[in-house]
Length: 291
Image (tube, rainbow, N blue to C red; front, side):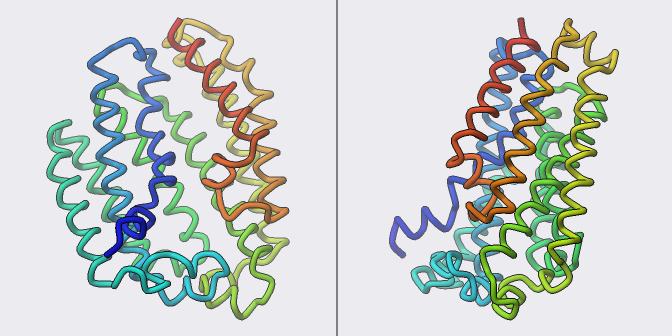
């Protein structure tokens, strides 16, 4: 087993998704609380271990389908650089270690992290082949990440924030399905790559993207203007960042429907306009919630 192939199997670029674990620190106004920062950082690392475990196991399950994708066929297991046995072993070691260490952040954190891990395994084994659920489960994974992060620092998170995160992740998931449809023009290859793609059409995905994106924007407005949020951060100005949220949402939809990137992670890391808008929003959110 070659080290570069092993690193690619763990998909470190996708660890950015685990940033959801850290969000409660920001929105609870505790970025200067050393204990909260340490706990959140530990939670982030543990979720990186668990998510890499899922990626490793998932690549073994998906190896045959990945061979029909123009880019995913180069993944370590699909390309034969790592054997299925080695992939399962790497995933098993990371999963056991991650779950065992999760207890250090409390039983509630362990419950959420275990729930995330086993839900993702179920997704890889079965749920990814059920249309609509294939995207809903991914969105729920982000909600579980944020919930675990909140438990790690012992804070309660507004239900509106969870609704916003869930609908935003639905939006991103449906955008990814659209970009996959654009990337693989041959319908037979597309269906071989992902069985649920035969149930999606450009028209359906356009409606789902519009609906979930609209719900996410409305949920952000409801959260940022709620009395609870204003009281917690001591300011009603968070809603003024809404134009950035709108721009980021529209930009994400635009590049996804053009098929310019493979998925959300590529957009976050490579699309400069989107990345800049997210960075500016994060800076403003940290400032407004903590100063």
